[in-house]
Amino acid sequence: MVYLSRAPGPPLDRYIAAVWYCEMDPRPVALERVLPTGTAGLIVNLKEDRTRTYDAEAGYRCEELASGIVLCGTASRFAVIDTKEQEQVAGVVFRPGGAAAFFRMPAQETAGSHVPLDLIWGRRARSLRERLFEAEGAGTKLDVLERALQEMAAPGLVDGAIGFALEEFGRRPETARIAEVAEAAGMSARRFIERFRTAAGMTPKRYCRLLRFQRAVGQVKLGRRVDWTRVAMESGYYDQSHFIRDFREFAGIAPREYEAGRGEFQNHVKFVQSGGGAGVA
Image (cartoon, rainbow, N blue to C red; front, side, top):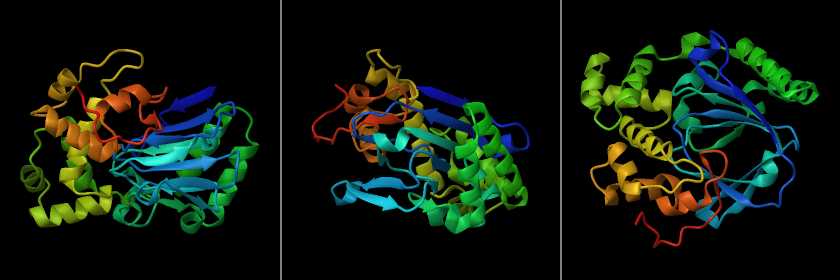
C-alpha cells in the first residue's frame, strides 16, 4: 500500500486539514463503513471515473455517480463505500467550516451527500482529475491538488464568527454551552444556529455530540483490547447507555462491533450490519 498525507502550506492550512493519496492492491469487493467526522472532503477516484455509495436506508443499495471526483458534504452519520473505490484515490480533508472557502453554497445543502464536482467547478473539476491521473508519484499528485485548491480559494466566503465558535467547541465539546458561545460571537441563539448550519452543515448541538464521539473513537488503538467504560468517561459521557446510544446513532453499530471491524484507518470499519444486541460489556 502507498499512503501519503500532509497538511498543506499557508494560506490553505487555515481551511484544509490534510491532502492525501492512497494506492492499494486490488482486494475482494466488500463494503466498509466510513464514520462521520463533522468535516467535508473531496474524493478523486483515479482508478475509475465514477463514484459508488450505498444507501443504508434502502438495504445498502448501490448508488453510482457518473463522476470520479466528488464533494463529500459534512455528515453526521456513517456512509458506506466499497473496497474497489479505494484502489487509487486522492482526497482533501477540510477543516470544520473550511469548505466555504472553495464552494459558494451553504454547507447544509450538501450535508450528508456526495456531489459531482463537475456541477460546482465545471471544467476545472475534470481538468484536476486528469492532472492528478497524469502526475507521477504520490508527492507530485499532492502538489497538483494543492495548486488547484489555491486557484479556487476565496477566503472572504468563510464566516469568521462561526470560525471562532468552531474553535471553542473543538476545545471543550462536552461542556461548551451554545448560548454562551453565541453571545460571545455577538449573535442571538437563533441567528447563531442558522449561521452555524450554513457554515458547518449541522446544528451546534449535533456538532458537539459528533466531536465527543470522535474523541472516543480516537482512543481506540488497533490491536489492543478496549476498556469502553474508561473511554466513555474520558470522552465526557455521563453513563454507558448515553455513550452507546450516540455510538449507534453516528456509526450504525455498537462499540464492540467497531472494535472487531476497525481497519488500518481509524474511521473505516469492515462492514458488519448491526445485530442490535451488541454493547460495550
